Image (cartoon, rainbow over all chains, first blue to last red; front, top):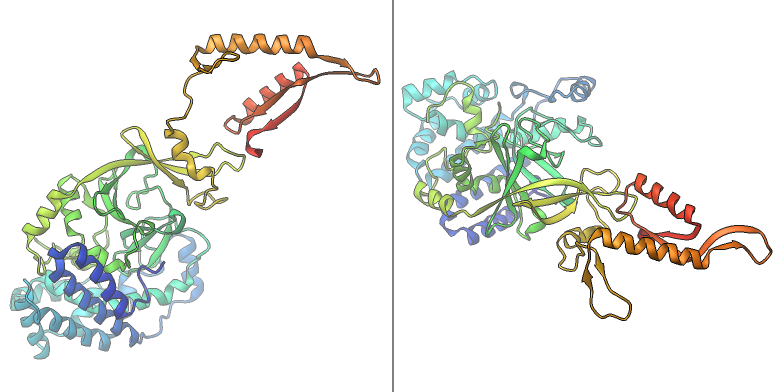
Length: 292
Length: 188
């Protein structure tokens, strides 16, 4: 079943509607993510990435030796598309009532006036150089976190396209038995049970989806069933939270056999913040927070 | 929240959501009250093996409070890849069925009632019946006068819930008695 790639705006709308119907209190938030996701899927169609110059043999060797195919600073991005998407996302957040609208409005005008150099912060984000973000926070009073969110959201179609492009070098016949993403090395954000209970993990950074071992903790690779546990959630039968008592981390899992809803992973990841609160209160840590 | 170096990618990644960004249209109180009302039940997944036939498909038992609550095929088992046959799919009801016999039960000839008996009583009774039947009906020679030493009045039904070693001992014991009719439960 499709859960991450190739979603049309109609599919995303349908997935969002179903969540909103179930959780009306989150309507405004889902509306925002829905609009952002649609803008991202549309932007993805016009992504044009430069040539990735690492030889295929090297990629295959890296994969065979259990290294991710690329590290984040190697990711290529389409600056033009990301810049337009950045401004579109700013519009989405500015034109609706939410906690960020004022800040985002400010970011948007600073970017239009070239006081924020978008290409520079895009590059800095990919190269993991946070100094431009610190500088903007200090001088222009824009929270680093908010700018980071906008930048990541604008780069997301490039990151996903790049990941799809190089993932053809993965050995799809053999299960990747590591907990980190075979493409970029980040930790998974969501776990899915699909047909016949087969487990897949979705990368928290490049959204790559890979087949995984069913019974193990992707964060510490613990496979001892005595120290692995899961919690099912009443009224949300398709959801469960897998926890590891060894490393005290958790990951949300959706069993798609238990629902007829359209499952669009990016929306699912973001529409369940109460699960995060609950499990953090119980003493567990979110397994993925991007990269470790 | 203080954002430190290299933390930016973490908070900005796919998981960055309303919580990190101050709500995005949902107040923290609403999210928190959802969290408070969340009813969760802990369970464990334990891997086991289907006892019904020699393919020995692996399955996953979901265990809550020490009790099996559901079972499913194990997708990690290369033979069946998570699929189960009609018998294997009923594993949960085999474990939890109210009809499951947990103690030796005896129904006397012509009686309508089953009685619970101890294992020692039951083994004694079985041994007596086997010995009497064998003594009465053992065939030393066939119609042509050839020595056959066989017991044709008893039938042994094997069980796929036995291990290979148990099955081997059972077959040797039956052969020693002279049994020729034996079959396996998985074939019926």
